[in-house]
Image (cartoon, rainbow over all chains, first blue to last red; front, side, top):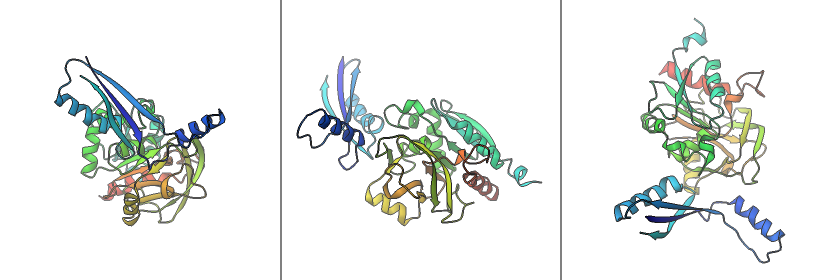
Length: 82
Length: 232
């Protein structure tokens, strides 16, 4: 079994009000010096069989269309376990 | 022959996705305007020969992943995207607007309201463009009040795209009084280059009858399309 881990984050220029709310809560809970919090998503894809280049290319394509919206988000494939 | 029956030959499809809420109100608005509303199903890759399509508000697929992100890949959307590219009039309201952006039929995206709260209010708007298939029955600069209800209604796009939308007269409606969700440049609705595809965050379909709406200011969206189709 293969595994691919995809991280999706809002682009830096897109306001992240959820991250801001978390930032405020961290401050209220006494964590000092938090200057910014950004909230993102992680997708763990478990795949049957071998992960070849063609399959990985397909994962890239879907990471850039379904898993993320390129207008507001960036994705990175953080981990590949073939 | 009354005006209503003159346009009754026009068939306007309203798509229902799992989680759509406002499909019935949209269909009703079509009928109030004098058209025939045709129910379309997300899983059916067939537009059944309709003359125009409304993508209604709601929470398609539970707003999972991103609003509209999964609906974009519904079987009916493959047909719709192709038809819209060849000029089929499409109006996306609220979640429908989000689906149109996710489908890249309209530029930009809708993100969480900057204040994080769900907003539900009667919203004053200014109609900025009447050269779209859905706004020809308005006057430029006309001010209307229709309901607005969203959690992810903040319109964003890069500066170049915003400049282009403004320069090409593709900002269809703008928020007045307050910016309710952090939308860039107070944008409430936009059109594609051709003007056949319009996305709108507020809900004109909830403002077509005095009994249930704050006004009937939303009705011209639906009479515009019927009038346009008759003249076409």
